[in-house]
Image (cartoon, rainbow, N blue to C red; front, top):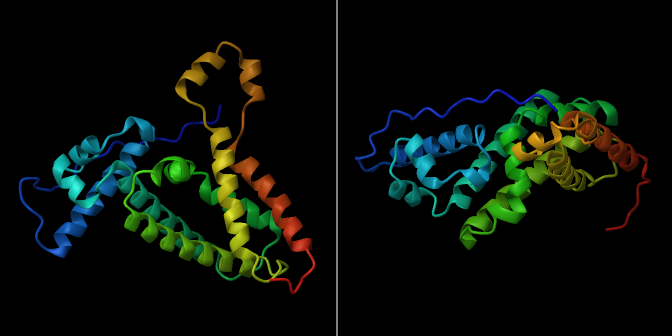
Length: 236
């Protein structure tokens, strides 16, 4: 079984829950505290085991106050996913720069950058089935617009790193990566009850062992190599 990453416990920030946030700065601070608490708690327990009330308490706020910033639990964690995606992509852009790479090197670097992002991967795996299911329409629209910018930025990064890709293929590669992260992430994660059951049969457990970074890099390399071998066309 892959080693479990070290988890840190949420620490309530220094806020006074009895005082109303009046300025835009105060509201921004409280919103950030909620997201920080949600992120820390997601590192300790699965999404399904968390509640808005618990996150609010960890952030030093009341449940009612939390709902003024995020109308549903899904809205809260969708906002956390947005922040996590922005942080991850910004870091990757700074790391990769504008240097061309081979499909293998690029695939490995992407996989390495995502491996420690357990919270991000957990939220991506719940995006379409859960997080988007109980969010006001305006929240969904705002998130989809944000996601479009992430796809465009990621696509530009892919095309810079892999000049052999057909022009305009970058965004499609990003969407393919999205699907791979969800699939491989699901395969590489086991619930505690499955771990307990498989402990009785180590040989069987080994057959279902999947290392996220290794598997993602291998699959992505094959896909990128295939994309780079495609002849350029003028089809729209």
